[in-house]
Picture (cartoon, helix red, strand yellow):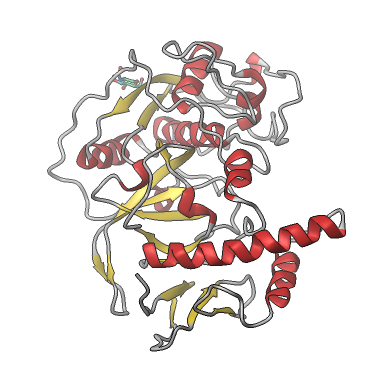
Amino acid sequence: MHQSFSFFIVFSFLFISAISSETETETLSVRSDGDQLIRQVVDGDGELRLGAEHHFSLFKRRFGKSYGSQEEHDYRFKVFKANIRRAKRHQKLDPSAAHGVTQFSDLTASEFRRTYLGLRGLRLPSDANKAPILPTDDLPADFDWRDRGAVTPPKNQGSCGSCWSFSTTGALEGAHFLATGELISLSEQQLVDCDHECDPDEPGSCDSGCNGGLMNSAFEYTLKAGGLMTEKDYPYTGTDRGTCKFDKTKIAASVANFSVISLNEDQIAANLVNNGPLAVAINAVYMQTYVSGVSCPYICSKRLDHGVLLVGYGSAGYAPVRMKEKPYWIIKNSWGENWGENGFYKICRGRNICGVDSMVSTVAAVHTTFQQ
Ligand SMILES: *[C@@H]1O[C@H](CO)[C@@H](O)[C@H](O)[C@H]1NC(C)=O
């Protein structure tokens, strides 16, 4: 169905209204790094009316893109235009978020999935520990571990399907902070290079660096290995051609135990508040075009393909524009600080949107003191 609509984008704390139109013209707004607002006007047939080439060159400059040949350039331009149309479709299906140009606008959906996601194994191991049921009566209305010092700044996985390792380190960084009061950035590269833990239920399905992995297997590896080194001692390279350089004498944080949380949003919230940030899996299809706001698509697959970190939640409220704000989860992603809301994503709570409630794990860290 074709309908006119209006939406808004969040620009730091500023809300800028875009115009609703009676005609077939719709406006796609995207946030730019400076204070300039790029507007992309798309007509009813989905063709860029105002200088697609111009917008493509802005995109290339903003994200430092260059292509090896004219052929490649022309192909990427085609993909870019298709992604603008796709962002427009996402905008209609997901009106409480803003969708537009991102650093991934020159990639096809399958290139994006292959290169920037990386969740392998869609089932939880059948022998996984179940988290104990926690009381949920006194949960705060809003909660954010970023305000309490348990979250390191967003990192960047680069062109490597290692999302699962960032979800794992994020959860252990938080648990280690709760156990010791210290926030230490932990090594994804150790997991990428050294963790080849396999899923006992799915022989042949093992953590495999840039080709994907699973957070629960990574917790299992970390438990067996003794712990993770720091980011500083074992820095991220974003490739999986290296050998394992794990040094047991440099362990900075260790897993005491980990467990999976039932598909119940109150239990997820209670575990988040009590145990720290949680490793979660999600379907990332809307994240390729996400710019800001609370993502709450009418339709979203629950096929899990991305590992991220749940760090907080917000309650329902009314934004200073006419759209009702929905209760949401706050998600830390691993695509750098230039993606989404300074590296974070908001997705609505309440109906397991994009599978966000389906695979949630909590980890506890061993109390240790780490001397640098
Ligand atoms: C997990 O480890 C933590 C920290 O050592 C401990 O307090 C907690 O009771 C353990 N949980 C389970 C389910 O064993």
